Length: 392
Image (tube, rainbow, N blue to C red; front, top):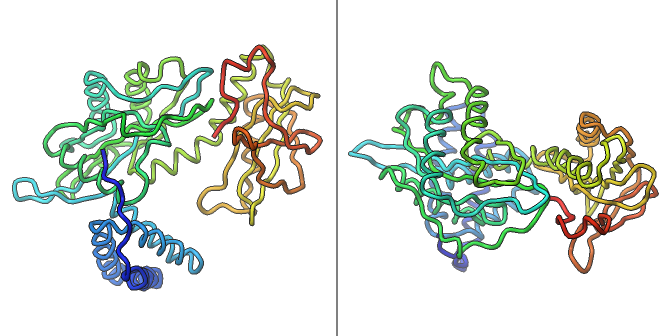
């Protein structure tokens, strides 16, 4: 579907990085909206040229460099790069149209294989109808990729994302969809809970609304509720045998980040649901053990699940720290609140720091038990062959 990245050209990296850093710092230090517009125009032009020249390494190197300094400059540069690769402008009959790469994530879990892959023409048509009716503004055009992507199958990098945006934008203007060659994508890894992404581009005349909630009588939450209800009915065939719920559709990177945040709590809920069904027990008969795991700094929390009073870890959930979170973010309180809401009241939080250890054979994370031991997850024998034993 997408071209392969080529290495950045030698001799330009330092100059291009320095220019990106200069412009990002200028935008971060701006004191007015007028000045913002100046820096944004300069930065967008520079980033667009680098994307056109396929200079992926330069963009990543600049982000790495600016991340060591002013947080505002990092946010400014990251926002501008994301915006440049998920948007494009196309002329239609002499008039400018803006196009935006969008994602409609679905959080799913299953005791078996979570669905995905190619979408039939009829199902794709129905998904477009529901998006148009409930999520998109009147007059907007949309093109969808005929594939339900797993996280492993999303575009890798800014340049491939920009290329996908451009290809889908051209399809939207032509009232077509994008055919995806499934053979070009990696296989999906098996997890109890995972996310699936419907990708597309919405296009509208410059200055006009793209989304239903931008219209005078639109409402964001009502749009989500109707999409969950009507779009969910269409999605049933693609995710047969799975429980799922839609996250808010929106701009590609924003929807991606939001679904990442939601998937942490969803994975905990899915794990408890799976264990209670598989073992024939109630949530109150489970105990959850929470540990904080460090590399050079706090990287994630891991939650090990056991039967109440037993040492063996049956399943585990990784709760990674996301953008803006650190050791001062009270993730533990959020984890405890989710567990209590679904009926798990035996919760133990270890004070000690654990190392980021994984199984040498299968790569699965180790999870803490009540005694502070890091163990490989393992279901009883009768359940071992029915479901993968690791979660995102």
